[in-house]
Length: 256
Image (cartoon, rainbow, N blue to C red):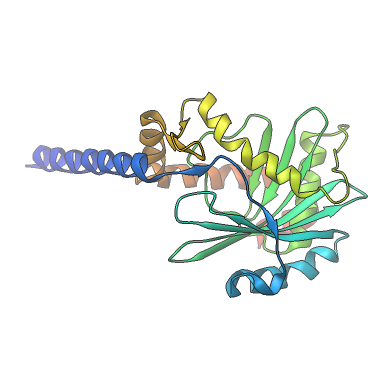
């Protein structure tokens, strides 16, 4: 009886994964080109505007200039994306508050990023959602959803920069063209996934769709029990990063 139960569970999970891959394969689209347009804060959706209003003064107090608030269009299926983008001219650090709306909810996170002339980039953010595709080898991303204070997150970011990019020269952007850094990152998303076999250029010439390989691997990473195991591994890795930093402030945060 136990063997039969295991067989039924395995069959159910297999069918669930197959149906999930089929659904993702046929519904997923990612825009090939960014259509970022600067917009006044008061024209954004109410929830997005409230999130930005809360964060903007906090980030400006850390020495960042607001480059602008942008509507980014529908980058992925059934989503609309928005970003408040910042630059610190003294350190060549960048910051953004990103918000994504769907018919069901609005999700947001804060990120600090620094890019170097050798191509390496370090990003430190509060995003608790794990990506379902492989990360770019040139970008080190650290996710700390428990650190919601901007000053603490920036301090942690600087410590990670010291750890992984000591001696490298941070790269800035021309004044007035700061958002182009983010545009390049987003527009490289599709081509990078084509190179690793996860996506292909769609016949509409405006978007990327998933390959069968991409659909199955994304489904496997996104469904239980793999998703649970991935979250545990990631939390462990991020806690280890915090413990490795020498700051007593971050150490105290870990003990709290």
